[in-house]
Length: 434
Image (tube, rainbow, N blue to C red; front, side):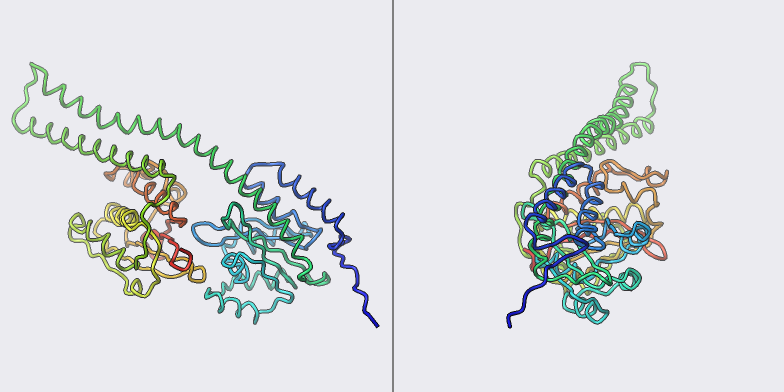
């Protein structure tokens, strides 16, 4: 006797009904197109399949080279806040099955979730198991999940993870065509919102850049003009020591102008090149760091710089060495200026299943004020506190570093170390993703 396949339903939605599927995708497309606001779009993506295809959804985006949960949705409005707390605001790492979907660009179906399976995924992907992630899964109680990569214009933006709870049918292969098409629409919506946000921010930043640059150029120029005018006055009575002091201030102002103009030209070159490195090659992280330090040691008078032995064991990175030398130099000099007298340490590690190498520069100084962390990579940002704002510099070093790293498809972040001190971490693609 030939068995008859049972119809496949989920919450009244028949996933193998072409007409229903087309109507669902049309409604989803309309919902995704309603806003170009990035945050709103992410929330829409999280909700788009709930409750028609799944009980809950989580959007995980690539940020600073790592996968990070950013939005969530639940069929039970009362539990949505708990889901967001456990999956998004807790800072917990994404589960390894989502990391695999990101790495392979292929959907990952887990028909029945278990702790053993989570550990197996983590071992295979070579990522640690975050206890917060495991605890969140226990509290939420998903029975089956599917992680679908969000790919737009050849770039993997993140992962859409859907989960079904107890009482709902597990995900099967026959669910893939519809969810794959849905993920494609979601990726397009996120990419459009991201591009719109970038264009809006670029226009705003350009106006701020012009205004700030004018101010920064005028300040040393005004000082130089003042000293020169005083020296040229026929009735000015300046002794030799005063005259020498004035000339030193003029020289200092000229150096400041030269450094500022140099950084402005560097920023312009990077932006005009669309942040794309032009001379990439394979290079070991330890060689990269040592060569970068060779060019800055003379300026680090009496400072102990420690290079972690683990750098020698890391895989090669695919970078423009000259550009990354500049990034490391900027970070080391930043530590030297803002943590005077502190030792400086550089070390590295592999993350994201070997696809990313992180290089860290850290010090034992006063750390970074919390109010500065969000803006520390902005152009001309010198810090909100008096001590930081009075440190010599153009305020463009970290902005240049970020532009260069992002041009490599990597990320850069700043954080405070436990026990004191600051840490800057640069994420670069390894040879595995070249």
